[in-house]
Structure formats: structure tokens, C-alpha cells
Image (cartoon, rainbow, N blue to C red):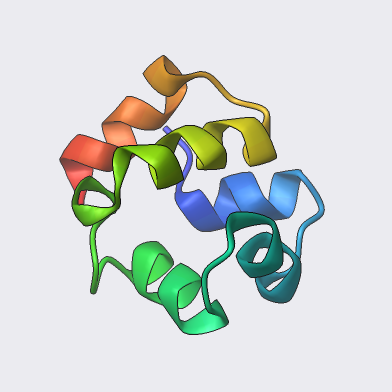
Length: 68
């Protein structure tokens, strides 16, 4: 299972780019990547947006939602 940071880097996105694509701050992305704020606390809209931005399925993202 890949981490959120690994998925972001695999897609060639910087923290700043992903934050802009998601409509959140760089700090939010850093918090998601570190586990300080879990993706399970993100709105459903943000979770769905993340799957679109990273070009992954909700099923592929699910382990990150339950792991963190």
C-alpha cells in the first residue's frame, strides 16, 4: 500500500500543486501526509476530489482512510 505522499510524488505533484488542486492549504496536505489530521476527517467532497486529482479509485484510497 502506498502512502499519500508516495501517491502525490508518483503523480509528479508538489505539495503546493496538490494543495491548489484540492483547494486546501499546503499545511493541510502536510497534515494528511503525516497523519496529524486524518483523511477520515476530511469531507466526502475532498476525499472524492483527491481520488480525481491523484487519478485513483476510492477503493485504492480506502486503506489510507482507515489506516490513518
